[in-house]
Image 1 (cartoon, rainbow, N blue to C red):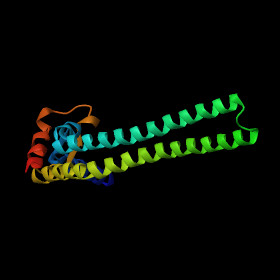
Image 2: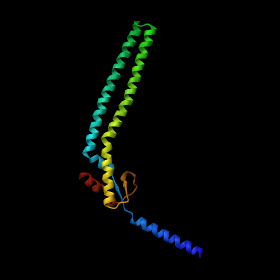
Image 3: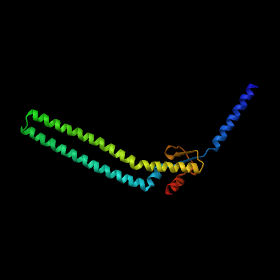
Image 4: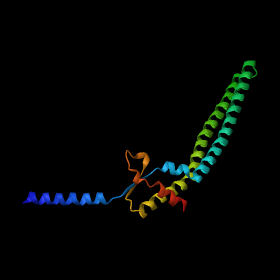
Length: 168
């Protein structure tokens, strides 16, 4: 009797689980393709590239000046114009400038990263909201990104729905 009750409970559990799985609706998007088509992303990328080039140019200028100053110091050392103490002081100044350049490079990467987040963050939020809206309007329980799928039916692709939502 107890085993019949256990079997009945298991059958009921499997039936409920199967019903739930069949009722779920899945979809997928290619978010990279959607983002690549957005004019806002293209503009943000252009702005980021301009900032990066500007900062790189400044860094390159700093580096070239340092190299010139090293050359001048070497000439002074070879000609005997500097005492050993002066040589040490000048070398320390140049090492300090090397550290400044390294700090500038780190700051440059941070500036570009911060600007990327500032420019692209709202765009990503907009796309995610569109995906969420499409899911809610079309009764999808899950929408996956195509890049993580091993297999998907074309009928479950919701790219066009998300693009339409973004166009509004």
